[in-house]
Length: 147
Image (tube, rainbow, N blue to C red; front, top):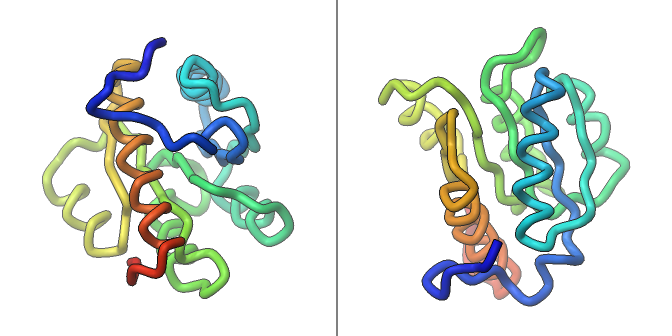
């Protein structure tokens, strides 16, 4: 996929590590394939939010894409944990969910989500959301207060 000029990925995007969290193996594969089309090659995957939390304790991650509804801990709970952890709170966090109701989106915003993408989605839509999230990451690295 060619990156539209209005949504360029940072030059270091290919070297970043993305954590993809979804209880659906197929959905994790779809997300990773779209990211690969953007030139991103390093992924960690988790089928449960609790597993993702464990990975975050031991592996450096540059961006998280997480489903809302999963068995056990929900994606929104993982988001809260990430935002409460000083060492992790700077990581861009995208919720990728079939939950499109405004109440869900507003709750995610109130908990510090970087961006929200509803399923089903297109490759270009994922690209726009990831590019925007990585811009937030770059600003945070430059010293801007986030979240």
